[in-house]
Length: 166
Image 1: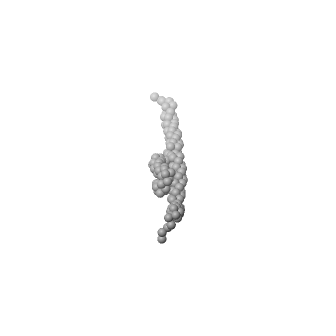
Image 2 (image 1 turned 90 degrees about the horizontal axis):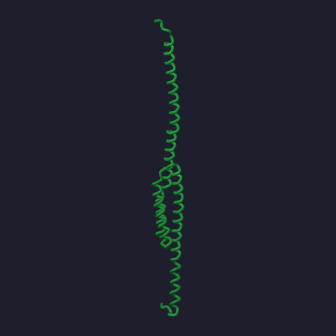
């Protein structure tokens, strides 16, 4: 079947509109997926940052945690750049990689926090309680030594105060 030459431009325009309308929802779905992945990665980075902040507040060494946060932040930044240039597939993949890096971050931060809290409690026991116990030990030892020396000098003084009959 041949198309009338006068109707051919209308047919081509209709075909083009059909093709565009068929693939447009797919492009929007990729864009929506990428935007959702980026938003989720941002939320996870904020939660992990808060966990690292709490671990640091407890006295934990968070150098390794900060390195992981930096790596995840770099991937998120690359994802946002890919999204800005309409490379939605790459943006989604990079955002998912950012989230996967942070998969065990919170448990590691909590472990660091607990370890730091235990060390702080142990230091308290050693420094404060140990100092108090040491102070009482010195006081008791001084009192015992004083009593011992007092008895020794009293008995020695009793022998010297007797008159000698020589």
